[in-house]
Length: 527
Ligand code: FAD
Ligand code: SIN
Image 1 (cartoon, helix red, strand yellow):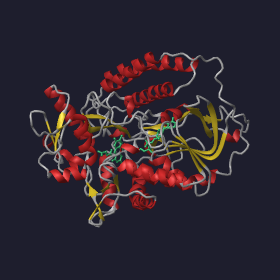
Image 2 (cartoon, protein in one colour):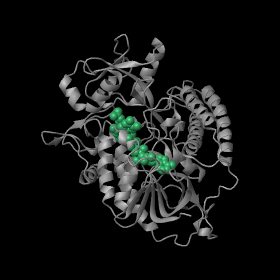
Image 3 (cartoon, protein in one colour):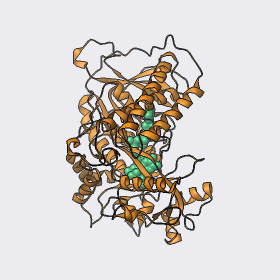
Image 4 (tube, helix red, strand yellow):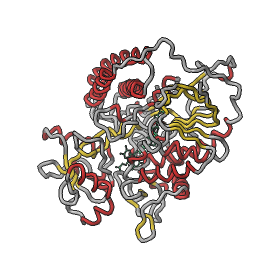
């Protein structure tokens, strides 16, 4: 029977997990688990870049102001201050780890995205995330005290409920996680002095999403089952411009294209964004996504167009080589000659495991960083390209804060996983249908525009699915897909419960029956 003991258990190998591991490996031994191959993460698909103040015409106070404005009153000012003031130093960390950002004549080329008052987005062409993953994984492989286990999926956190120890002082404490090795099918505990959730987002709870398949909210669901506080789950960011390609996998058309001069048009050629906001295509995402949604409904169409054809062709090709190639190879669209069909899709979850400014969750020895965490930075709407930055800034802070935990918990005993009485049933087709139903319900009733009636409809349907899936989970040997479905159903429940508590429209949460902002709700939704 396997039992791994480690100082640090890091769950997830995106920017949050890898940067935390690189820091903590300076003083502890680290085990990273990741449920697919090492680079598979939201980070790997990030296009636009990472926002930070590096230009002489820019200032942290401006980045602060832009972030607070996008967040519609719910950003935690202290968290944002840390983000913008420590951000530039963390960019230097990334560069020291080997990340190569695009330069123009020696200086870093800075892009612009919606809601930013300055050009401040560092990027590696339009494949920033892949470059970050590449560099961090190279750095990780050089560290002897970091072990990275691919195809290992965390099932649940180990808390005092599981540990064989009567010490009352250990109440509300995390001791690691139960993990499924997807190759050998073995389930075993990893015992850790500190556990970091760096499990990323949950946008695959929606039918249309920009996220890869790993984005199933596992960390948030595990933390919720362990009774950690979860905040602001109603704030789901819909990216205005995913590629409209019903047959293909999700693919994003970066906001950086609009920052470069791209124009949104209806299929009849009409440019509509100036009618919705004076910033037109560069308004924050919630405004652009709602405008597209309204235009599609008005015209009865499935997509709008993003037009780049008026821009210098060679510059477009050079600045966006990944998007150019993808559209040409998969849809036979040359984006310098033809507009790109785009549609909004679920992209990012602003809420998550509630943490303090050092990434501590409400459970002792459990930290959370990156998209799965709610650090208070994003409020009711995340400013573009602030997510990668949040992950590195708060990973650094969490790493140093976690040092004090390393002397604890040598005498804990964790029992092996008990799967007596479970069957190896193959009902995957039914589960697949459950997943499709869940994603459809969330898209139809808990999407860009919501109402109380729709949320209650969604609640009833998701409750039924939850019971069915939980019952199946209890009597069946665990597999990756069933774990993910179980977690997505839990996430859907959390989103709906949170959305039902907010009787107003703010940022990303738009209720047609409460279209105004109401300052009685100027607070986080904590579950
Ligand atoms: P991720 O990078 O998603 O990593 C999560 C990791 O956890 C993965 O390795 C996953 O396999 C693992 N994992 C999950 N559950 C388990 C489990 N149960 N057991 C084991 N492992 C598990 N943000 C920006 O700031 N700028 C951008 O330009 C940008 N572009 C984007 C483009 C796209 C297409 C997408 C999808 C997102 C984009 N974002 C961007 C958002 C940003 O990429 C993410 O928010 C950020 O990368 C999250 O990093 P993370 O480390 O928290 O999570
Ligand atoms: C994009 O490139 O449009 C994504 C940026 C982000 O999500 O921050």
